Length: 173
Image 1 (cartoon, rainbow, N blue to C red):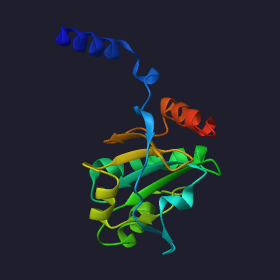
Image 2 (cartoon, rainbow, N blue to C red; image 1 turned 180 degrees about the horizontal axis):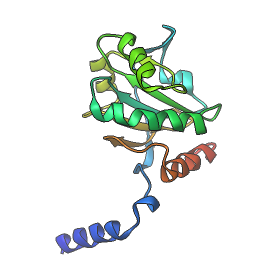
Image 3 (cartoon, one colour; image 1 turned 90 degrees about the vertical axis):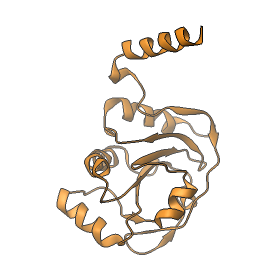
């Protein structure tokens, strides 16, 4: 019986147009998070607490990760479209060589709207429970994890933007 239920669910999902499906599966209840320290492109020490009050799309990535490199332009376009007082894309690099490779990569592919952030790789991966790159977490205004996706995505798609706008519209859940 379970197998039939599983197959029916899979068929129903497959029958749904991809554009209608949410990009990121949301948790039933928001999850508390740890926040390791990280630095921004100006060398300032930060944590996720510095972004409280905004919805944050935290993307853990590295310049040596091919899928990360491919999705970065979509994150840049998302920040250009939704970024501001209510929403922020936080691309957190775990490159061991520091911000130099990140800066070169941004220049190379024309990233113009994303900030540069760097964290110690092991510390960030443990704190955010990252098991593969890229890993992206959707964080609400209270600093809680609302959803996560491991693997690349088209972050500026209509479905993604609609999902983020729903979370942005929530005030105190």
